[in-house]
Image (cartoon, rainbow, N blue to C red; front, side, top):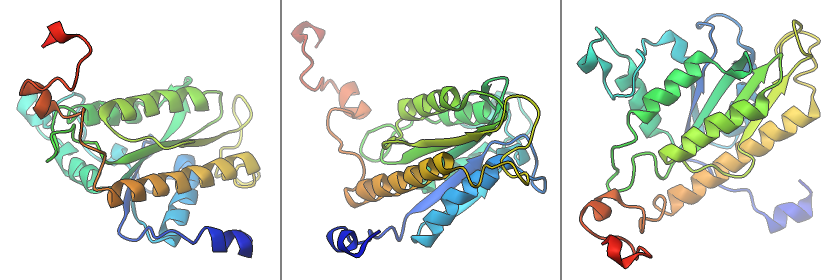
Length: 244
């Protein structure tokens, strides 16, 4: 940034914000994840600007399938979701990372979204759905087409659950179609790809900006979107008077 632009746009303060990065790779911890390599571009920007980050691989967690908060109440012997849920709800920013398989996000990513959905009927202290006031984005990598398709699927689900999606909230990289080098492989061209690096940078700053706006505002405005008020009979000026 030039000195003149810096004077007009002082550096924002992102201290106190936190981000949870869920790397939905199929590879357990200890194996190289190309998705994580790109996610670390985003986390480096966040950490440089005072955001606390944590990367978790859900594949390492016992996450039974289902859409309930605790699947031990529905026939499973154990469930690692409640502990992960605590991290999700403590974070201002949720960043999903997923590889592309058969043109879709990974099965791990889909399971995470299903488990997030299991919490979506809960309310915050304003009577809004539980994820209101939080920000989300996604990063996608692979060796086949599908970045935008996977991003649409993930971002649609996250906004439907109550997350705020800022402008340009996705980024990704794909190599040549078919077998070939992945993002983190030597000579792949991924880390040098200007389009990918630019989009990842813009996405990261937009996530931080939106999280700061929401945190400073005390969350998303609570009017016209409170389940508790709707259940109490307040219909927020519904256009059909007979509906009341």
